[in-house]
Image (cartoon, rainbow, N blue to C red; front, side, top):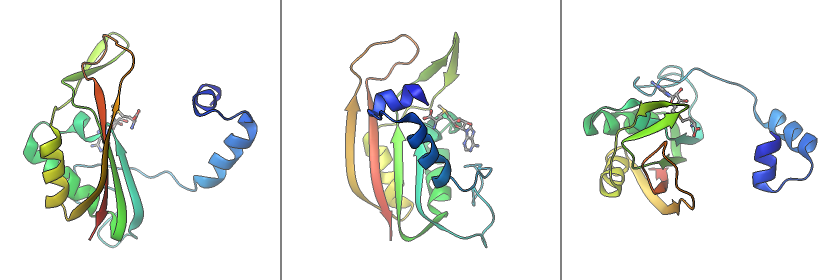
Length: 148
Ligand SMILES: C[S@@+](CC[C@H](N)C(=O)[O-])C[C@H]1O[C@@H](n2cnc3c(N)ncnc32)[C@H](O)[C@@H]1O
């Protein structure tokens, strides 16, 4: 908490932690490989779904990736926002272990969002300013899309 508050420039850690605890009202199991990753087809939909570095950790093919984006889109209300943060990398590291990462390019990401019934409103890259040996990507791709 202290580390993240420092990164975000928050001075009052206790205040920030209390706000965060109030904002999180539930924690649910999620499996992106399921047609309805959280709950069932009858469960309430959400106004916003965010995925960060998850689909690349699970997918083994472009076909799977596209299906997982569709599954995530099933969680959204019409007009809801989908935020996808991904890294074009072949692997990432945790400790001394190299973990699986399925690499895709921006063109494919845009197509998979469109095919899932999402309209891309904004995309941007955040370039890494440091080099490290535990992952081989140079930038992060952020895409913000809306369900039609
Ligand atoms: C590279 S980590 C990213 C974690 C976090 N979002 C972050 O940015 O630090 C990949 C995440 O994918 C999650 N994951 C693995 N299999 C999954 C699945 N079938 N459905 C949803 N998430 C999954 C893992 O639990 C892990 O938290």
